[in-house]
Image (cartoon, rainbow, N blue to C red; front, side):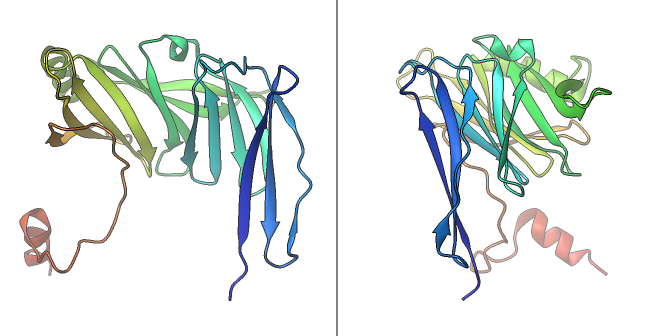
Length: 230
């Protein structure tokens, strides 16, 4: 059997300040590592929502309403804390952290049917910051799609950012007991926005890239690409 590691993440709020640490169990040594606690300036009250996001070798943790993002580097198992851009503190703003195609950490936000992308960069002093890289102008195809969605839906959320794509969902939950949702994907390289599918029952989803199931057969775009292959 090949060696493996088990990662356990813990929080401690007993002293009024949120602290975080990670324990790692190694199958080679059959021992747990000694954790190092990191203070995280957040109110540990029950009203705060704790979420985590994954991108490449990094795992990001965030407490709702707090201006800092805690990042765990899985290669070194070390924590770092970075201040988030001010726009993300808007209560109507939704965001997720992931990576672009070259592995650079990025942050995609949606607010009032506008979408922007931040990249994590290191300044001349060696301090890591989130820097606005691009946003979708209203006079582009993607911008026109967003304006169309704004007339039909009342909320736009970012579901995940993975492998150079952001996955979003537009919601209409105002006049019906059913939540009408439209799922979309955004290519972070071209900033092209594509409508994927509608779901009249829910909006929770986890994007996952998998091989085309052989039992389904070759249909649609996949069959067309195969036919045209030399």
